[in-house]
Amino acid sequence: MAVNLTPQYHEAELEYKRAQTAEERLECLKKMWQLVPKHKASEKLQAELKTKISETKEEVESDRKNPKKAGVSYKIPRQGAGQVLLLGGPNAGKSRLLTRLTRATPEVAPYPFTTREPYAGMMEWEDVRVQLIDTPPITPDYLEGWQTSMVRSADACVLVVDLADDDGPFAADAVIERLAQVKTVLVGQPPTENPDPSVQHVRTLLAANKLDADGAADRLDVVREMFAERFPIHALDVESGNAIETLRTAIYQFLNKIRVYTKRPGKPADMDSPFTCPVGSTVGQMAELVHRDLAEKLKSARIWGQGAFDGQTVTRDHVLHDKDVVELHA
Ligand SMILES: Nc1nc2c(ncn2[C@@H]2O[C@H](COP(=O)(O)OP(=O)(O)OP(=O)(O)O)[C@@H](O)[C@H]2O)c(=O)[nH]1
Ligand SMILES: [Mg+2]
Image 1 (tube, rainbow, N blue to C red):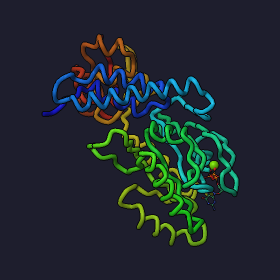
Image 2 (image 1 turned 180 degrees about the horizontal axis):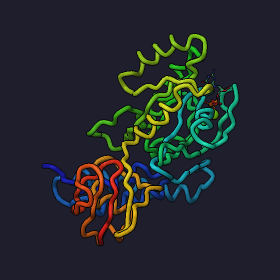
Image 3 (image 1 turned 60 degrees about the vertical axis):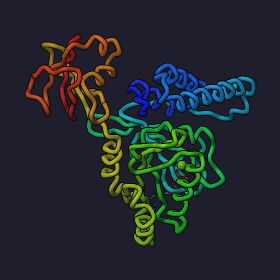
Image 4 (image 1 turned 30 degrees about the vertical axis):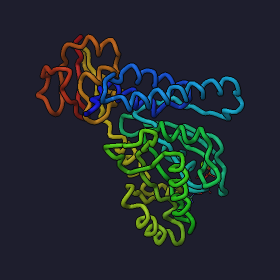
């Protein structure tokens, strides 16, 4: 018998996976518990939730009693159309990439382990902005708890591969392996079904960097052989900026978002700051981004753009397209 979970349950589950602290996870689990249908078919799920709630409660308690044990923790609030992490082995060019795509100025140096803390910047793409976060390198021996949490809660990752070093492709593979050990799986396209809810799939594209280096073309062949089936691959040379704009576009497009502009009745549309929503979003879901109250009171909307004739009145279930202009009527 199917459990028939509601969209609200799935939403709470998504929030759970994105939670960065035990306390946040506990809040989400409680919400999931309220939302799970209480019948025979869901008994197994109910039992799993109960176990997780009690384990997480213990975790919250022990963090409270031993605040030092929790170690450093970084939490960077999401901004813009999405949060994208720059990951990779040591010296791959992650920090240099951040300086190229944003106005941020993290330290760039010709030796490994330069970056020790996350560093955020905003990447502009047309009229939207994406949050990029530079992170310390991940190796078989070096991965901190906060890094894992950040990867799990990111909207996407860019795995930077060093084409100037024979070891570059293998260092990237080590990053993938190390994260997989903590149930964090980097993939080009997440599977539609996930039988183990403790495993988090994170959409990732590969940036094969330092294409200008001697022997880079041969190493790029190795990278393609090792990873082309799993990830989209973008080869570039961050130092000179070669192919950097292609990567900028690829990062935004990888988020699978559409832009929607709002307008008030009788006024021109606000074409400066679009809302960004997942592809396939409806008018109702977009209204949630504007204001929860508005979403609840929404009666209809008028749309200008693709998928409707200009000014057409539609219901909350109407599916939006990129660059639609929407007038919400409560
Ligand atoms: N030749 C060449 N060198 C590059 C390129 N991109 C970055 N570098 C150099 O590679 C070195 C490492 O760059 P970083 O950006 O500090 O590397 P990182 O991945 O942040 O390194 P960690 O923080 O130590 O993990 C620096 O000396 C950069 O100038 C490139 O496209 N070509
Ligand atoms: Mg760095």
